[in-house]
Length: 317
Ligand code: 8YV
Image 1 (cartoon, helix red, strand yellow):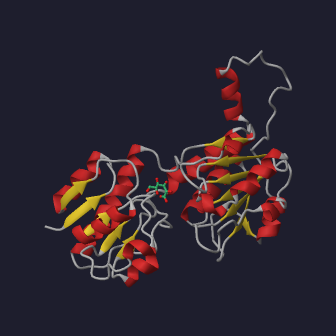
Image 2: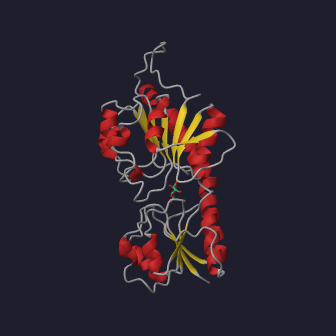
Image 3: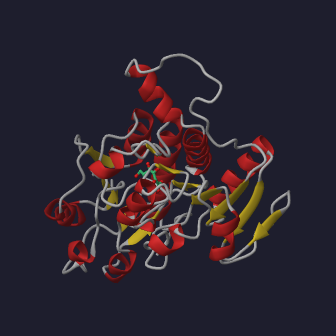
């Protein structure tokens, strides 16, 4: 039987499914693996099911060209924590879990759009602190979302799911930026970054973290957003220059921001926490049991297919 390591305690159903096919070890810790532990994992297991935070960098693969482990079946769609080129060079294939995460992540984007536009976090803090003195007609006025324009940066599966929710649920106009044209069942407009930023009431980031998308939102691009517009990031922290965003929020240069991801997770700068015009979530994108189960089952399927000698369905390198 192949030996497989699950680097975190995953839902029971996933562990059970993995145990049906493999000799499984479940690491009972929530902290990410350290370099030495990743190197040991490559030597001791035939396959590893890593998660966000396990930084499989080039250093981990260096000198591991003949490692026992031949597959990293990542739990999640984003795999920027794995150096897939170094993995390939070491003879390790990498798979991910597209599809399983789509709806839940799109739901969190909409949650952040509404929370940011309608000042929900700020209002909740006010009630909890006993600072609410009663209703008045001009109190805590936010931005009305229905009928507005959303600019979606990255029109992959998640971007399209966000577009559908904005169109069907909120009657919004959808502009998007993407390498290729996407056909949806309703009218959308493909635009360049400058135009998208200037025209959008909401800018939603749903691109993978790559060298090209690193700090895509920076002092200059934030400066192109409308002063009432909200920036939503459900992608990866790297896509936004956090220091520039803090300055833009402090100066009230944009309407607000809703973040599920951060540049140095789980560190969230105090300057960001001190601001009222930003909604901060702890990377909740896929945090629902059935979603995490579906992600895990997909990763297990990738492992099973690979060990059956076939190409796994979600190979990325
Ligand atoms: C996951 C995510 O929770 O799928 C992704 O890329 O960002 C998340 O929502 C995480 O990756 C789990 O490893």
